[in-house]
Amino acid sequence: MGLYFIAFLWFVAVVPLSVAAAPYAAMVMDARNGQVLHSENADTRLHPASLTKMMTLYVVFEAVENGEIGLDDMVTISRAAAAEPPSKLGLRSGQKIKLRYLIRAAAVKSANDAATALAEAISGSEAAFARRMNRTAKALGMTRTTFRNAHGLTEEGHLSTARDMTILGRHLFYDYPEYYNLFSRRSTHAGIKTVPNTNRRLLAAYRGADGIKTGYTRAAGFNLVASAERGGERVIATVFGGRSSAWRNQRVAELLDLGFREAPTRVAVRRPARPAYAGPVTDGRVGKTVRVSGLVTRSLRPLPRPGPAADAVAVAEVVAQTVEAVVLAEAGEAAEVAQGAAGAPSASPAPATRPAAIAAAMTTEQSQPEVVTRVSTSGGRHWAVNVGRYPSRYDAEKVLLTTALTDISALDGALRKVVRRSGGFDAQFVGLTRDGADRACQRLQARNITCFMVGPS
Image 1 (cartoon, helix red, strand yellow):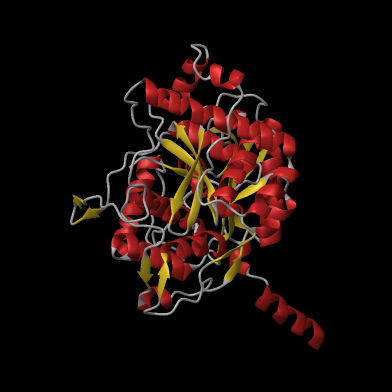
Image 2 (cartoon, rainbow, N blue to C red; image 1 turned 30 degrees about the vertical axis):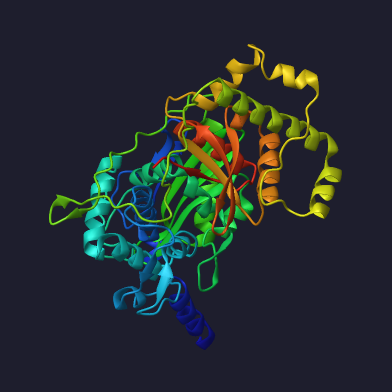
């Protein structure tokens, strides 16, 4: 009898009865067009737990994009942020840390202290930030969501639905693709330590899974919004009220499978409309947008040419790049080794004397229209895709060439450009529209190539 009583006490202590009783809700959506493929209690208002941080991060991404704050700006941790309960990064009151590390900790580790610090950095207080979260939720079409805090710990009135969180997950993917890779990292360095992803088991177990966010409190149960892509199809599944993390992951995997079965193979992609940027609100008034250092300070649009001589120079540069690409592609590693032995040049070397056939081709009427079209077409081609910063110009040019050959169609119309910065050489594909840069970066990320979009000033 004593053994049975001990077993009963163990069961009561270990099994979270309130979790088992948490209401269940689910939704599956075709991310390409927003079509709902399956739903259960999808409009029931429930505790979102750390799914809340999806909106926290959405607002932070918006603030960074519009110059309210920079990724490398230092944030001073308040006493309130440092006192948040786990999960947390372990920040101390008075500590200073870059904004980018707080973003990583909130996205990957689901750190509550980082989420509060982000809220205070953007809006001055968590209460003001929560009001901005609610305005943004309304603009996104999340009609049954109310936020009271930035981290998702249980608070009266802090509620959302499976439908609203699925909508938010879709917007994160389409509105801020340059940040989306954060949610698929198995671990990340968050400034003071490396932290593991709370969703790493599903990311490792389910083919095509690349995000998005987990959540857990006793009142909410085990929640998850997950996205996966297979063969050009992308599905988002949301679960509220899971009984355990293993049960939740299994159920989400089943829902994703259901989504891939139900979703059509070919469908027109209809991106969700981004909400208009209204800026921060202070005392009921829209605040002023302030540009900070680290953002793009000049347009990537090429300057107009003064005359025929400049045309010839531009044509010569493009032809030189084309010849360089062919030579390196054929020479392979031998050319790279030879260049490495000679040392990384500090500037692009002058092209060697060209054969007469190539020189003649540079001045023909047939070659000029193609070059002019790529270099000087307007129509919003002021965006770029950055594929990394490298210690030498040669390294940056090599990466640009390799990337271009990896997916030529994704970068069609783009020009390779190396931009010298204080910390190295940025490798960029320039001369793209916003949609073109978005598509190119998504396709490169699908090939495990790190990239992000760079917009005009």
